Image 1 (cartoon, rainbow, N blue to C red):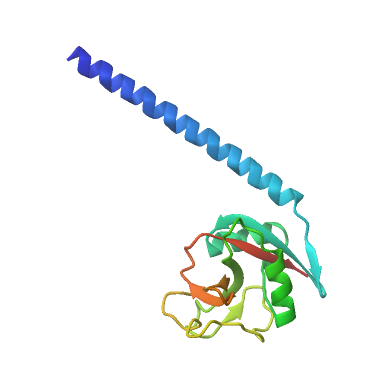
Image 2 (image 1 turned 90 degrees about the horizontal axis):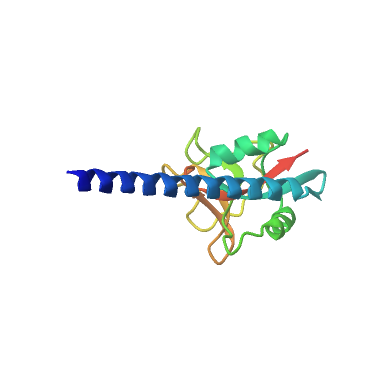
Length: 162
């Protein structure tokens, strides 16, 4: 019985030590991400400014993050603007990135979260109208076009501010 108690105690200590190490690692990664966000600069494209955020968040959290910086998830209104935005994205091989497009209110009726008109699109073939995939990612496939995916997916994002 004493051996079992000692084994249980050792296992508990090991588990707590591992959990503490994981928590410390997460805190360090969060601090590094915060430093990365504060050292990145907004880039002017036309009359708006954009910021690439490498931290992977779901769509709603990415929008909340942009709002903390007085912005929204990005909107795109021309191929020229889209190509410049794609140049902002640097993600260690991860190219798919959130923009602020959603059709969560009415399936197939896309709108920008920043309230600007949805007057440009760059959808991959067959990607704009899939049920339960209500959020817009860019740089999808080798064509680097748009795709609608589940909003719970965790991706980097692009914020916009006027």
